[in-house]
Image 1 (cartoon, rainbow, N blue to C red):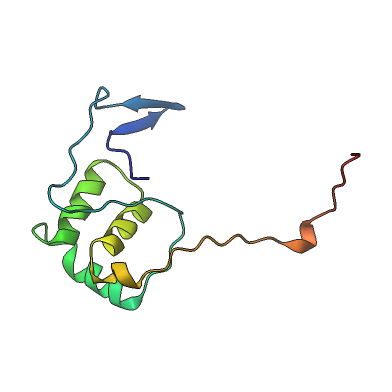
Image 2: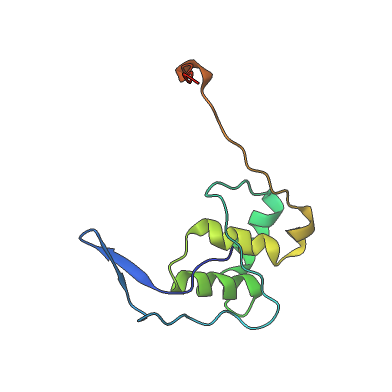
Amino acid sequence: GECDRDVTFECDGRVIALTDDKYYPKLKGQVRYGSGGQWVILSRELVDQVTADYPNSSSLLGALYADLTAVKQADENFFQAAVLNTRFCDLHMSHTVTWTDHTKMREVRSDN
């Protein structure tokens, strides 16, 4: 799925929409947006490119940063979009890893 494009904020336990159910338009062109897990592992090369490019709003990464910041997206949405829209797209791996602490587990049996 892709990130939501509406702008909301939370106040006193309520989520309030600022866009009145309207959505901010996505960047034009072949920009790919991403969403997924909260935790990502980044390569040094990607971090170097992001660090160099994001302050420049005329660069793709700068435009993505400004766009996703405007709609208050989590940082992982930016990094996923950065991977999808750079030379790193063909180099990424999509894996979901689950950590289980077996020392805290107990056996549960069904009566059936």
